[in-house]
Image (cartoon, rainbow, N blue to C red; front, side, top):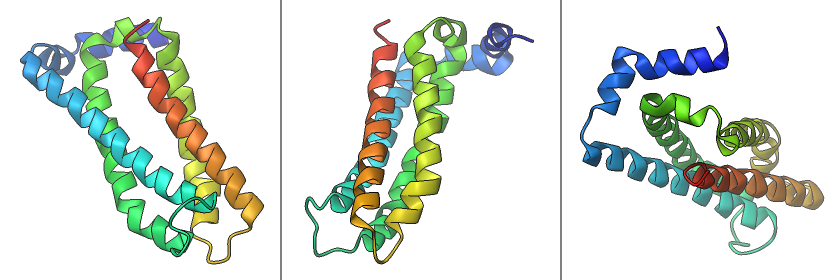
Length: 157
């Protein structure tokens, strides 16, 4: 089964048709949940990354900030996955030819990989190597904001 066939199957499934047939206010609520999820993810990443860069919250240890914002990150990611899936399902075939959609998925995979490897290792360390902290912060911020921008451009192309 090709990817396009999979997308067609998802879109024409009973659940895909059910979601597609829901009131437009439900769809607006899904989009709002998606935005809230991205805000939670980006704000938690930004707080810790800016601290790793030495900008703001200098009296707070990066590990303390990372632990304090971790729940926001995972709740935000959960909102993104659920709302994004429900937004995607009823229009799956329209996403297939969209390069920004594929770029977003690639960037999301890269951002998650960096987050669960380097970012967690660096951010949760009591004594952070300044260079490693800065590189990880810039990489993480760049990837997560790229995910957001790619997602935003999906609707325009």
